[in-house]
Amino acid sequence: MAKGENSWHSSAQVARLVRQCLAEGFSVEIDGLGTFLPDVQRGFRFQSRQRPKVFVAYVQEDAAAAERLFEDLEASGFDPWLDRRKLLPGQNWPRSIEEAIGISDFFLACFSRGSVKKKGGFQAEIRYALDCTQHVPLDQIFLIPARLDDCRVPARIQRETQYIDLFPDWDGGFRRILTAMRRQWSRRPAA
Image (cartoon, rainbow, N blue to C red; front, side, top):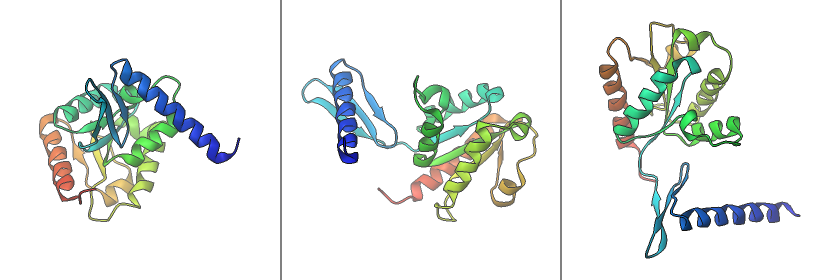
């Protein structure tokens, strides 16, 4: 099978799967694009993505704080991405995470005493987000470092980016994050 035929075959499989889910009454979200929703009269309707997407990076030890951020962001009108909420069984998670970071409007990095010392996925996500910032205009906000406790933010990030503390006043820190993201989102040109 030629390369073009293979991608057409994959696209046809995805289209069949989307149609099947819609026929069974399920909605289908495609990250970065929008959601196909069942519609009795037309079969389906498409709702384009309108909420800013926020990737939440954390280490497993800080999962409770990441979940709280997810809930608070969603309640505030954002579209948060959290691995434990968005990854599906069998998905290639490193590739899915890079894709989610790449299509996100904001990258919220949760720093803690544990995360700054731990090797692994969190550090890789931070490095990939830093690579993504190379393509963002200098006056735009993308990477938002948030401290969960009195930890030291990595020197490279501290040198270039203002961080916010979510301790001892979670609500106050979260309001500042919202203000920064809403201000930035309102300045972005319409797609």
